[in-house]
Image (cartoon, rainbow, N blue to C red; front, side, top):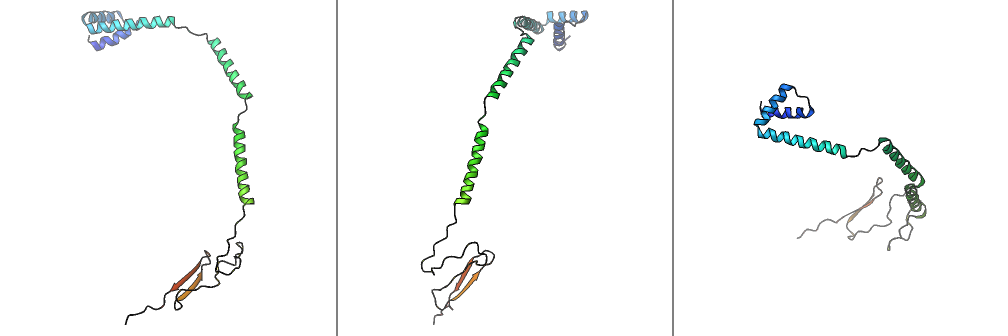
Length: 173
């Protein structure tokens, strides 16, 4: 018998399931092998400690533990039903504040009409809601009287575009 076989037999010996032949072969090997003898002693010590701990550890009464647990759970449910959570008040208050801010922005604030620029005609700007007026200019003056000026109003964007091209380039003599 080798040490590997004896290890499995030592574990089976602990359970008490060895045959007489196996027990005799194991005893012969352990007597001749100090490592297996040490393993047998360690297993015996561990088993004795386990049995000692098993008898000293108190096992609670299952019925009593169950009654205590149910009482604690019932007590926790009673406490939670008495206390009103603050979260719904906070959520309602936050949504009410947001609605008030939106109402203030929509109904109270008015669009500001820009003041006319100095030097231009003192005519008020066209109303913003009038779709027929996109852009306009009363007068466009280029710095060079010989320059050509072109004014264009883009109907899609409403931009007023002014192009000024210089007069013919002067050639040196």
